Image 1 (cartoon, rainbow, N blue to C red):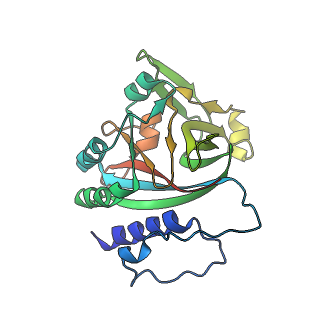
Image 2: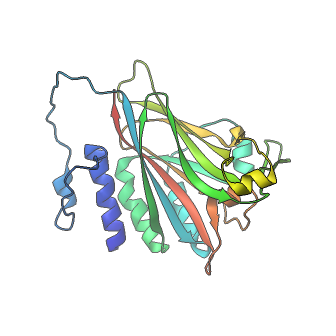
Length: 266
């Protein structure tokens, strides 16, 4: 495993076992920490103060050269599909989105496969969501008169002009009554217009667009994750799939996303 993946693997372990650190927490060096040193503790502590119900996630943004996207297929084949829930599974598929469900024990194998395909983690976003709330992960920023197209469940082209703003992945988590340590995560693409810039004013107002047909989710516990990737490389910046998964570069880049549940406090 390369040094970069060792670092991200250890970061993932530390978040999974201890939750997100605050800005004032000490940051010990991870250079001499062994994976076996990070084993979960069986000790339980009680406090007279009740913590707020929160659900923690890490979202890993992954890039691989488009010519090596076969490694994404390899990862996907090792994941589960039965736990997944879709708003419109056929539209999700024909728009070239794919998803898989995995568990903590699979992380090392995923790192190995990504290294083989020259993949790298380019960003890690940590989310702390109160029960029933959502947060947005920015996927792409659109300038000027932009458009976003996708396919509906019958394969017809839908969507259109959206204007100036950003495309995000909106992640929401809800505790499941009677199921301690389990939440229901939902994720869906949303376009949020930027109404507060000179450029946006000059081209006229645009509206928020929620791409319900591309929404998906699953019931998750600590250590579970969802892997979001394209079915195949996409070479455009006008479709929902293209904006999510493709990046122009000297060497074309394909993106994927790993959404990891690191902690549930209920």
